[in-house]
Image 1 (cartoon, rainbow, N blue to C red):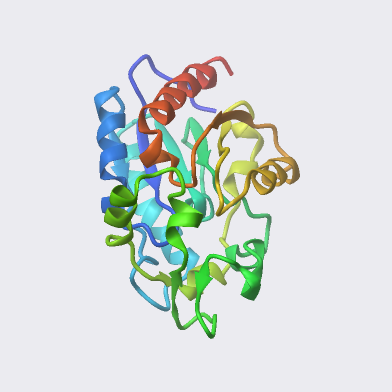
Image 2 (cartoon, rainbow, N blue to C red):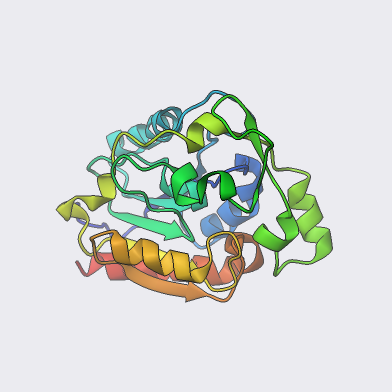
Length: 243
């Protein structure tokens, strides 16, 4: 594992399904105000059909590798589906998940989310060629936000490629022993998308040890509890440096 320098690491954010990079702008700005240079990956699966999770992995790496080539310390922060779209390699000093799906080899987000019975997907025919839409968004994603803020985000989100949810990532890189002591999971206590029970099951079945933090927030904790999440990221950077 790379030695963490005294400077603040660069944060690479991989958004969740349906979330364009623009929906992470305020969160990224808060991280930067705390001293963390931040890049948000515009995942290709958002707003585009027939895009696989491998395409999102490639997009993430296209932004990650130049940072590593410049000798930057990088922490990858994945929210929700963003936990699937990483395909990590070496050279990263930490992995932080926000209420994220954590897949095992050969598994897809579609399977983990309950397949056709997934309660927050609206599609009469869920298949790879469609753009999946989310439903009951206020309840599932923004249950601790005001109606005004929730509606603002709902207006910004887009359909998500069915192929991305039905394809398995090429790599589950965070399983490597090099990341021991450098995995962190921030749980969202009020999450109706990935309920707390399922978040804990994700952690337990992963086969690795996680630094676990919690925020009393919905699935969109980076919006409703921005300062709290940024504070936890700062704490985790210190904890990563101890390993």
